[in-house]
Picture (cartoon, rainbow, N blue to C red):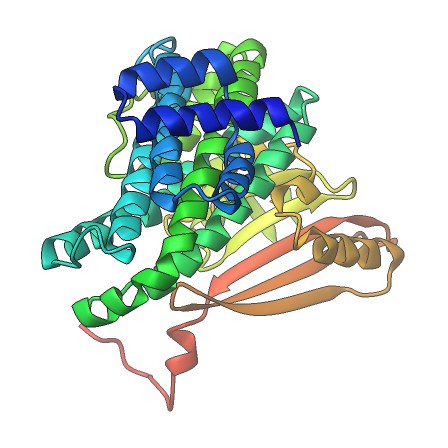
Length: 398
């Protein structure tokens, strides 16, 4: 452990205990310690508590440090023009840090007896948890649009590391969500369990956003072409935003901007012919989501049904399918593809419970008449209502 840095932290605590002005403490902390990562903060907090420093004082120090993080994020936000996708993400960073920190403060102060669990505090806790639940689209936009284009430019490590951090954040959020309740009594009883989770979530979010703002976003601004940003805008619009997202500037783009299409005319099949328009409509009106991955494990196509089960974006076209899955499930995908390629199996299926829906997922090996493996077709279907079907229905309802 760095004894010199520990002593600097102690001096910050001494200034807090002496009642020094918060702005003066911020300046001292910033000048003497620079940027303190949440991981380092947590480590030093534990050391200081073991040395007899109260949790209340370490909490004040952490609040000051998180405020410095927030300021650094806000300062970067103003560098990018309003309406740009990166400005949108940075703006959400500021708000999500604010919500996570407020939630941590409220739950922490109630747990320590500083506040009573009054109805208005419980209402605010539920509101903040709802804001965090909405943030799923924030992470989906990064994972499905920004990260794939960075990978196309050869930057693969940082996006994968950020995605892994997303998974860690989601795990904490799920724990928090599971303890939330519409019952004031039950929620009050759960606050003790929620305290450590809210604290860890605030720390992880601050650390993660700092890394994205200083690594992922600057790299994106350097690497992406204007055409690629147009694709990102379209993908963001398709995936959707949070209720608190600043209104983005939408730029309509044509299909010619995002993909190459064959000349107009008909595509001939053994069983008939279809125009490109008809073919696209056919795929997009199937009661299933389809994705095609070629023999080199690259995503080449996905259908765009209006109610997709899993998020897809145009940015993933040409992306390795392994990079489209989180680290804890990619080994299953790899096993399926290896088995398909080696002829060990022709299909694989799974069914999952997602958000109250039963989702059936099937993978099919696609081989030509000579048996050569050409790729994999993924078919996903919401079978919740299908499972309820009983008896027969032979008449058309008006």
